Every structure is written in C-alpha cells, then in structure tokens.
Image (cartoon, rainbow, N blue to C red; front, top):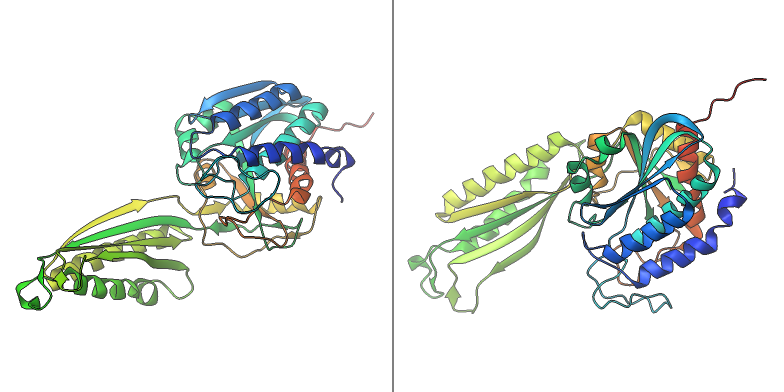
Length: 388
C-alpha cells in the first residue's frame, strides 16, 4: 500500500519544518525555540490540547478521535548534538558547535505531519498523545518525562517511536521483538599509587603497570563470563597517565563503555567489572576508585507490539520484522519499561552515518514515517463499523 496522497501532499511542509529545525538546533533539555515552534504548529493544526514544559521543554499534544476509546502515545525526540556541521547544505546549522546529526529534526517533522493529518481526519476511536521529547542524547529526557507523570497524566496505554537509519534501504522499516537496542553504562576507574623517578621504580607503586593489567583483565568479562550466545560489549575508550618520560605518575585513570541487551547480562558485566577492578588493585597494591554510571537500559520491544507495528508498517512500505539488534542505546527504553510498545527503524538510504558531521536527514522518507504514525493510530484505535 503506497503512502496516501493526503500525506504525500504534506511533503513540502514537512521539508520546510525540518529545514527550519535543522538550521536552529538546540541541545539536551534546552529546546526552548524548538518547543515553541512545535507548539505553534500544533495550535495551527487544531489539536485539542497542547501541554508544554514537561521535562523542561517537552510537549504532549492530545488529539481526540471521532469516538471514545483508549490513548496511545507517539514519540519524537527533538534535541541536537554538540558538533560542528560540515554538510554545506542551504539549511545547515546557524548555531556554532551544534547540529542535528542524528535526524531528530526529521523525527519531529514526521510526527508533525502525522499530527496535521490526524487532527483533520480523526479517523480513530480514542486519543493519541503526541510526545515531543527533549534530551535523548544523554540527558534522559524520556526518564524525566515519565518521572513527571507522563503515562498516568495522559492515560497512555501503549507507546511507539521510530528512528531513521542511514545506509539501510530507503523507505523500508526494520523491527524485531525483544531487545532492539542495548543498554549503555560507563565505568571510570582511577588507580592511585606512589609516584617517583622513572629510573627507580622500586621506590614507587606504579599505577601505569596496574592499569595495563586492568585493561587486559577487563577483556575476560566477555570472553570468559558472558555465555557464548549472549551479546555484551566492554570497550576501554580512554587511558590517561603521566606527564614526562622520566616520571612514574602517582595516578592513572581510564573509562570504558559497557553494552548489553538484557538486564541479566547488564548486571553480570557490572558485577564482574567491580570484582576485577578490586582484585587488580589488590594485586598491584594500588588504591582503586570506581565510578560505575548506569545509563539507559536496553530498549526491549514487547513481542505483541512488535508484531503489531510490523503489520502497520507493511501497509506503508516493505518491512523486515526480524532485524538485527543494534549496540547503540536509546532513552525510549524508559517509556517501554513503563508501557507496552515498540521501537522501529526507518531506512534512509545511502549517506553519512548518524553522529557524523556530514549527516543530513533524508527528506524523501518523511512521508513514509508520517504515514506509519497515522496508520498506527488508525489500526490501534479502529472506529467501530456497524452494518446498516
């Protein structure tokens, strides 16, 4: 089933909205201009309610259907990244050091397109809550919105979201039941010893040699503790120590990123890392300080809801309903922990990857995404049809 003409007709509008947002990126929870732009559009569309200031700059808009019924949520993230843009496009960022390098401008434009169509047609029984969320890129805006009562305040029973994906087939959907994106945790370890002259190592307690051993030992978490059919990543990404060639420093530190697809494997990795850090410190006689920051949990699709969104997507475009999981992380995970729902990808075709300074959202896929959101509402909240 092709994208309906009524949604195709919004293509230029969505493109214009997206280009404005792309040129005016905002970070984290500080999406004040973005939020104002969205609120103005929603009011012009004639939605029934616009609630602002959730998680500082988040918005929830309510559209009521033609008959009573339950409420489902559709979410779009709207924050940008702290990067300098190199695309050279006419709508490039005008804000130094900030750019939409992940396509959240496109996600907003697709949900706005769906909002306009749904407000005009209201071909559903119930309510749709349009969730425009700040702070996905690290601030945990989804968690904050939930803590402020998002689900209870608006009576949301099911929730859905999508993300564009460069270098996957343009206009094709990708979804799977169960884990689709990983958790992300960060371990920062500081080792403190006794510094001294590089020519007299016996007078020191060397944190550098301890750090070298620790980095090697951390590689055993996946190789020797994680079951072979599970997927976990432990990557040491920074090591810092020393100031000169003839000085053994008194301190060294490192950071690692840890990814997992299940709560059980996430906890296993944390427990093993804590034990290894303590054991290595003891064996080398250094003091270890471990800061283990629990970030976003794994994004886990409800099996029934993943099957539902696959059926919805199939009415709009081709679908891979058993795609591979991705080791990236996504704070929509908090919403899926709070309510049944599903998260899916929309292929954007060839181009620069996400979080790349040369990335730009492909406007050609906006009608496909908007059509998915509309059909998700109409299929989740069907109007009763009675024979005359």
